[in-house]
Image 1: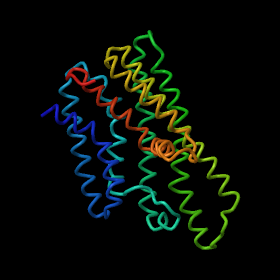
Image 2 (image 1 turned 45 degrees about the vertical axis):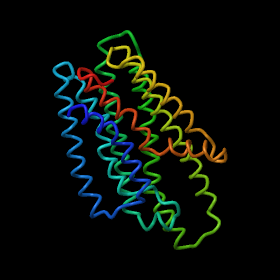
Image 3 (image 1 turned 45 degrees about the horizontal axis):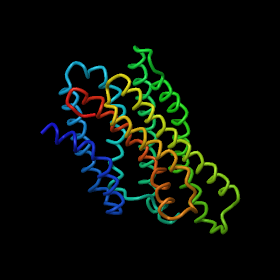
Length: 271
């Protein structure tokens, strides 16, 4: 049963993304209660997994939970569906989108604290600086990500409302300039999170908290994702699609989420 719970928790982000893009949105009166119940289930399963690890895992529970809890929040997005593809659809779902980016902002803050606590736990050994590098990278990425979330969640609705009222075409130069700036900010912030995750995996490997092959997989996948974030939109569709996917803000949180599960599962065979 414990193994099944561990597998389920590991699959949650991927299932949530598949449901979100596959269903295309569920009414709030259905999705919100389901999200609340599922969030409680996730926290309960996390607690059981953490306690199963024994006393050796006690010091890792806090950073693990801070890595874990953003995706507890993000599972609500499964009911939202993908981000709207036009200003009109965006305005129709304005409140929902503001909730989306408010939760992403909260998740960014929690992740930043998590990396700081994680680095502090590992500083008892001075053989490696991977954890410090990860913490510094997140310290740079977090404010950039928060600014990007504020742009998407609170600036764009105002801009789109203004466009709807004035029917201004083409878009004003200031809008195009700001959009270009925040496009770059978004790419940089997720790339830094991916790289920080790779560094955290190396730190865990050096402390015996992660197997070599698992750490190598984390490093390769996250570095590939970081590189993919810079793929231009006018490249072939398959590559451009991959670039778009990894720049979805919640995707960059999957690596830390899985590392959190590894941190509480050192004694139970996972990792």
